[in-house]
Image 1 (tube, rainbow, N blue to C red):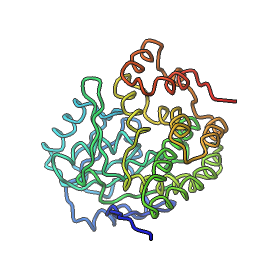
Image 2: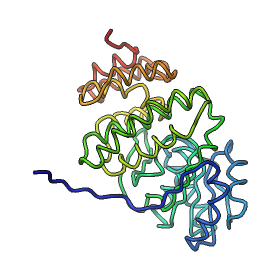
Image 3: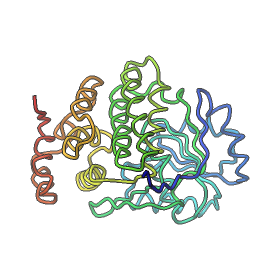
Length: 315
């Protein structure tokens, strides 16, 4: 007899080419908010301002950093509090929406997310914050964006290296979903199929829609099942050694998938190589001393980390 429980995540998704310019203003107006804080990176600020020109933006926070350092979270909260905002608009990748989540946890105001990468954070209630070399994560419905606007046009021009790493990060969400209830697992399997077909096209700058759709599917499934050993290991390495988030997922995913089983780890490694994603921890900035420290911190993953550091994959 088939029996399971499943808690679906609430929220509204608008998906389509040009949606950020054609639908965002109307969708935000429907939320009945009047004081919006725009959260983005310095590099992404011109795009973010152009998308938000018809919105009631009262302030902008651009001091966004990966892994959401505690001091950045506090600085963003200070700006939001000073400006008495009642909505947060995140435009960018995982760091931007992560910063918005840090504010929302304290102020309990809605987040509107317009992703420009395949990070998937926009679909989940998972938040993260780094302090003292440790990344702490948790789940809260206050951190789940109320509205997500997916526009493939916004990922055009994303460099191939970032596209590849971010896409492998999305695949990590899809792979994790295989351990969930049958409905979520079905979404995860479809996400793997779509991403495997779409990422090579996105990296080649031929088509972006399929990859973004796959990232959405993967993140929506991950939101239900939550983090597992792979994500916990990536967060530990990122928080302790400042490794870039998406490349760390890209490197470790084939290794952790091979360890847990249930998915085609060889296929994941082959895809990573085909799209030019990083395949060794040394390649993304982990040095030998940090590897030794990481092995001491996580002795059960010593063999995995050593192989991933070298990029050594069984022939």
